[in-house]
Amino acid sequence: MDVDGEGVSAVATGDRTIPMHPGRHEAFHQFTQQKLPACKPVLTPAWVISIFLLMGTIFIPIGLVTLHASQSVVEVVDRYDIECIPEAFKSNKLGYIKDSSIPKNCSRFLKVYKRMKAPIYIYYQLDNYYQNHRRYVKSRNDQQLLHGLKYNVNRKNIAWKSDRDHKFGKHVYPFNFQNGTLIGGGMLDPRIHLSDQEDLIVWMRTAALPTFRKLYGRIEEDLNADDVIVVNLMNNYNTYSFGGKKKLVLSTSSWLGGKNDFLGVAYISVGSSCIFVCFVFILLHMKNRR
Image (cartoon, rainbow, N blue to C red):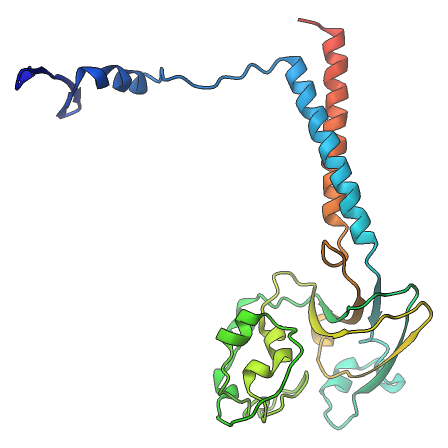
């Protein structure tokens, strides 16, 4: 039909009729009939072989560089939960860790086998500990942390800035922390407000995997090969009831972060697979040219 002297066509869609101008009718028809222009690459053998070869030549060097960066990180790992038990309690670890009358002091000697450049990060590591379990996450008790006091202490910035500024109060003090029957772990200083209790802030950031590391601090000087680090610690936390492990870690870092070979190995594996598939396609193409 005509409206005000202009030609207008109509397209029926179910129970409705949509008026269409002549210039738009062709585009609407192409859209509904899936005839719009589109990129349709033709994957010839030459294109496929070139793509796999290019991916292999890119991924393998990236993997080698990444793996070299990871291998340049120097780590000293010491598991202390077994060695820090007196000989008389080797067969009764739970009895030892639950008895508050037994001293839990322990000294560990860590020998540096390769020069470590500052900053050297100190971590404590837990294995087989599911910190992201719902029972653990729900066990946070804010009542343990409530109280007020004015006090200022400088810290070492081991926790995330967002956690210090927003998640833990500057006017909240842990006066009621660990006043119950449960024992384990370190004690908090009730004179320092929570935003400066960075050990607690680091611990409260939930880990995603059952094996994780938490930053404890930094050593701001270089360590030479054959240096011996004496660590005095308290073996308080109970990991024996669930088969967990406690470790102390000294580690340097690279431009990629800490020591982790997975990313480099993954790049090299994908790149090698692409090169292998490329040669397979070359042989198939040479055998059956079409």
